[in-house]
Length: 256
Ligand code: UDP
Image (cartoon, rainbow, N blue to C red):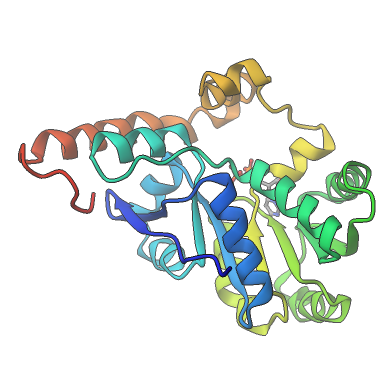
């Protein structure tokens, strides 16, 4: 049966899709069977704040095929504002499930992004995790603009169905907006810093932290350089609270 396009809500004017891990994966399957390339992007509080200040990024998010609720802040805001009862779908977990499915079904994967050693180590880690996974090409994420046509040709010539783009945000969204139309792929997922986690250069929060929805705090403590970036978290919380306080008591299910 065909997967239904997920319902899309807006949190502070930024879109996000009401999906679980299962329905997100079903929708990716649908994209893989379809004709045109679609992008899969993660929405977290940091990206909401960025997109509110950057109309170009907001426009790029709006054209995405699938916008997963990546941060617990997104899940909490959607519930508080009475928009939807969604669950968290971390981008790195979806990436792993997509690769698992690609290994089972023979889809070809291309890895683009991160420094050369990390890109190579991420590829090895995926190949080890999913025997039979067809990684048909890879490229580190520090090419010049002049090298882009060659990269587009390399991706198209590889026959890749799935492109994992790990350039960080908003660089990966910009890259997709510029190049997606030239690519003969089916799915392009923006995976941010996930190759660093796969390569082991950045440690993901232990499961006990993840289970308590404290992955954001672990990232903050283990990568203090992110502190400035993470000022987005309190700003997001204040803006969501402001939105909640300004709602009329009867306003249950309008767009945030
Ligand atoms: N990166 C890249 N090319 C660039 C800048 C960054 O490939 O020109 C990579 C960088 O090496 C890292 C990832 O993009 O692997 C950014 O990770 P970050 O954790 O900052 O991304 P986020 O998940 O927060 O968007």
